[in-house]
Image (cartoon, rainbow, N blue to C red; front, side, top):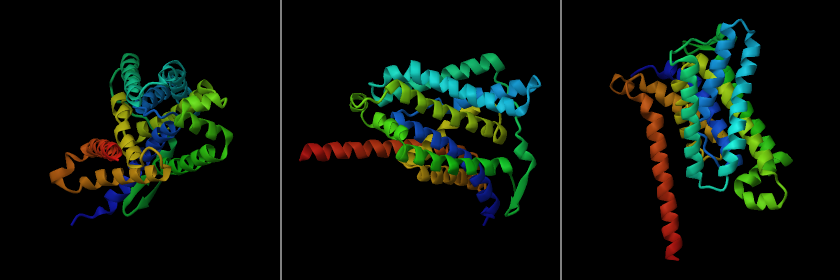
Length: 292
């Protein structure tokens, strides 16, 4: 039997980034009811911006701040100019619109930086600990710590502040929230800005841990969405657990040569299965309601 210790540690490390990305998806959904498929692409543009600034001799910390600001700005502009106009449309329309943003970001990135994979390193790579014979760089530990901190902070904001209450009311019933004086434009823009900032941080971490290439970072939305769907697009702790679990299962698949080449399809299969189950549950509920 294979020694799963190293695979477990490796899976938890990459799963921490899946978890962080999943939190960004859930956070936006809980405040706007929109599933953002452009999450990874926006983060990729931010990371590529940081890379270009560093190539031109700009200090690293300035480039990181610029990456987060760029991702935040793109997400906020989309939230104000596009998402706000689609707020009364079906959720599928809003989700499809974010796919358009993702394609736009991919096209822009390929035009500005080409599609050549690049190396991007954070200073935290210079520090590591050894767990079960596996060297775990501090970058991966930072990702896990950020996921936990973001989950705690988001819960505090959404449930214990007036701002969080206003944002949740918009996601629940925009018409009623507007009647009560909640500004859709203001709080909608804030939700998209928060999602963009988290996407920028995720993009920097993934550019370091995986590789800096726009399509690779764009498709991080798949395991992130899988983690979010496992949590019902609601529970932040379950999102973290699901992200870690997906990372572990992917990594452990490498221990078996027969399936190692296919372990990357796990998030896709999980998303499809969860969507089918969700559709089945809604259908059963409708049939039961009509039968009464």
